Image (cartoon, rainbow, N blue to C red):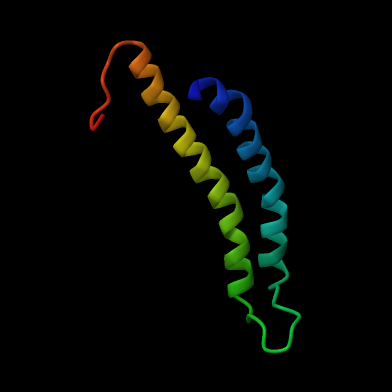
Length: 83
């Protein structure tokens, strides 16, 4: 059942990833991080790429919640649109 998998496995991992990546992303913006390689990415691109990490965790959690709600509605006898 996806509801149990979402609550037991997906949600804690997404929350952990989101919380742990906030300092990492914040430091990249605060120090105006650039690539150390010659010809590497200039300033705004490295922090922008690192900002995708917490965004990914949040969107993955949102998708898991949406699937869990749909499955819960199915257990109650309601049909989800498009199924």
